[in-house]
Image (cartoon, rainbow, N blue to C red):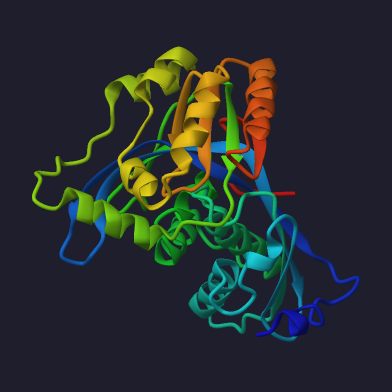
Length: 311
């Protein structure tokens, strides 16, 4: 499907359904050794943050996707788009044609380790379910999310959750807050499979421990203790991301020097995340990061945030 063709299929004036869906930061990402199927067992503590994409579903005569917002030109508009795949899977489950136009308004960084594509998949699933009046049970929606990708179920759930297996089997976690964040957006993306391959290369010949959630981190989330959360943040993929993109080390250092309580690569990167004390600190750290020349732009956000929500 070409970008030009996608703009024609939205039905002007047709009743649409819009879903808002959050980005995520991995406050802990413990990675086990590669499994025989190529995946890795994870202990992945997700926290939803207040950066949102919006997915609008309107009736159409075929499945099409359009996108607007920062880096929209980097979003695939064909059948590989997770929003398109979500609509197709939901329609197939109910034995109907996936005749829908999906419009994505992007605010989550693209290919940035913040689950923007996964968010769009979850958003499209909820929007199409409402548009088509299907009333699909939540557990069925979560099963479709898991089929779409490891991060997609959390985009539906939001808040905070522990993901095990390859990250798709979720247990919702108690979370207080608010926690204040700054995100530094890098130039270009990092391929998640490439980062995992680098993790495997770096881990070769070593004993990789079984991944487990940190009790101190879970307690910090539950109590809203920012200092304790800062002390417990960890990302097992960070050495691999830094190996592939050494320049991220300068970004992490710049944010720390500007007063961030903790800094880490978000997921597989290349977005970097900085936990700060309050909103005033967030503005100061964001300004210092932009002035440092080590990132393309910055975003501030708070957490927790709700999962996919009908507007």
